[in-house]
Length: 53
Image 1 (cartoon, rainbow, N blue to C red):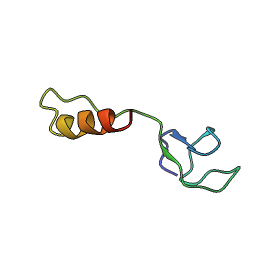
Image 2 (image 1 turned 60 degrees about the vertical axis):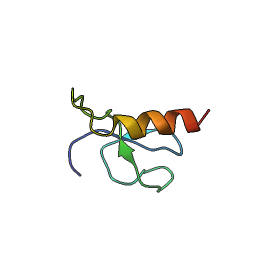
Image 3 (image 1 turned 90 degrees about the horizontal axis):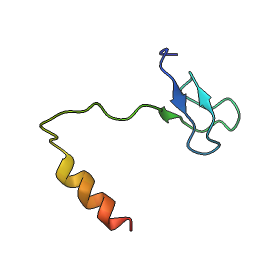
Image 4 (image 1 turned 120 degrees about the vertical axis):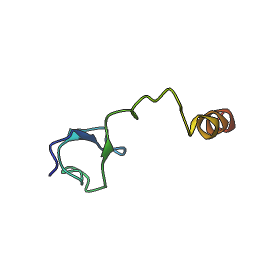
């Protein structure tokens, strides 16, 4: 347990564990990526956003 809040992508519950206590699937960080004015991966993020439409 790391102490940072995490979210289960399957059942959308929040937890502090690396695996969801309800469904047992792995959890992901609930926080967005840190802002950087350089935005080194911005090009790829924008390309992925247009592909998902």
